[in-house]
Length: 426
Image 1 (cartoon, rainbow, N blue to C red):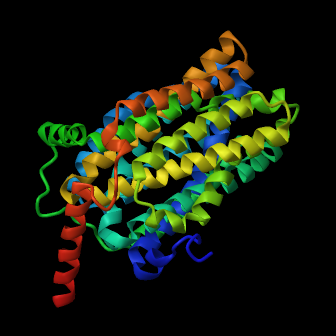
Image 2 (image 1 turned 135 degrees about the horizontal axis):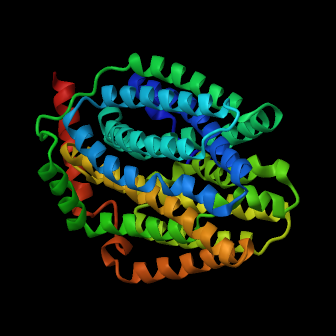
């Protein structure tokens, strides 16, 4: 059983990783309360599928622009300082939502604007967060660190929506926003105690050419490109999040809204807590492909289920499959990309796992409005299975990826071993 238990070594070995992990856990917990509060508030103001989906759609363009630019900044600036500043900006934007929610007639337009600003800030922060990991933990601990970062996110997703649902339904969305602000204050204090993470010696100044170099590198790596395309397809065709407020009503359980948001993550947590085996499995590409197919199949089964219990069960299975894909994608990214390119590639990664869900929400809502909620969820899951299988047939480098023999993985392993040897000799 020891081979399956999540590895906590990065938390024991690295003080700065522990601080970053704790800060993210607390702030993400609060952010997930807001994540539930925003669509709930839009639903209450409009009663429209599309209006709820638009709150996610407005995030796409800022996320693309600032995600790519954030990757450039993460390679050129101190990553710790960049994370701290963007956390502060998120606090200020949440304060705007709080003030708006206390108005007699809250502004729907302002909610959309702030959603876009949140996306821009996330685009600046997440590449720095991802790029910081290889500087905080040893090479052999990267898989464990990725699992722990996922666990942090999962705890927030499970606890945040559940408590957020209670706060919102018992009190108001304003209380939910206030709770989010409190978590940002704690997060900022923890990050302040971290050591600085300055750019590498090979870092380029922020520029369009630096961004283009990162994009060229990503496209030159067909294994990396495959991880992006598979995840985009899975999320675009089978992400039903925008339908949750309406799905809970259709199931006759509006009180279970928070559980719908949390169900996918329950499956993710189970996989994460038993992720010890992942560090010994070599064929990462194969795992990503089959996990994405499993995600689509489970979403389709949830769509045809009329029982709340079955819906939650299949959503949990989907979450487990998605987490297997995420852990192997993260391992490929962290163990094969040079540090001087890590921020820019993290920006591209952010787009691959963020744009898909955001666009997928609009797809799900539009199809539900044109047909029905059940058809939208089920058809989306089946299309996901087909598209992932089709893409995999055109991605031999990803299908055949072997962590022991991949030339990029071998090269980075040698570089990290040399860096560790030099540190030991100092």
